[in-house]
Image (cartoon, rainbow, N blue to C red; front, side):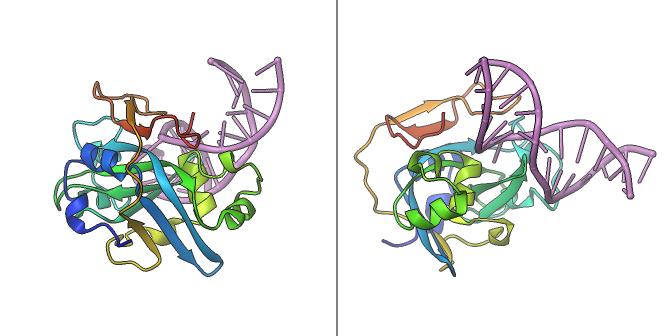
Length: 190
DNA sequence: TCCAGGATGTTCT
DNA sequence: GAACATCCTGGAC
C-alpha cells in the first residue's frame, strides 16, 4: 500500500472526509508501529463555517488550514490532541478531523499507551486515537504524502456502507451533515 | 502573569 | 445523558 497522493487531499474537504473512510493511518515510532483503519471523520471549512478554527483570524495555530492538502494538522482541545489532515488547495482553508479508527497493527502498544485493555476503548474518539497511536504536536506540519513516520495508505477495504450525521461537540454547526462514518462499525465513537 | 475556553473523556446516575 | 476533571493556548491585562 502506498501513501495517498497530494491530489487526493486537494479537493473539497467533505469529499476528502468521506473518501478517507476505510484508508489506513500508520505511525512508525521508536516504540513500535501502530496502524488503524479510519472509520469516522468530520469536514471543516473556512470563513463560512462557525465551528471551524479557520472561521476566526488566521494565527500561527490554525494557519495550516490554508496550506496545501495532505499535511498533519494537530491541536489540543480539552487537554487532548486532535489529529486532522489538511484539505483543499493552497490558499483555501479546509481540514478533516479523524474521529475514530479500527485498530490493526500494534494493538498491545496501543493498550499500553492508553492504559486500558478493552479494544473498543482504544481508538473510538479523536482524543483516544491520538493517545493510542502516539500522535502529538511533534507531528504537526508533517507531510503525509512523503513522511515515513506518519502516513495514510490507500488500498484498504471498500466493502462497507457510509453513513453521515451532524458534527459532534461543536457549538454552532452548519445545516450540512459533515460527519461521515462506516455504518455498523463498532469502533465509531458514540 | 493570569485566566477563560475548548472539534473531549470518564464516570456516575 | 449529565457532571466534572483536564491543561494548553493566546489574548487580556
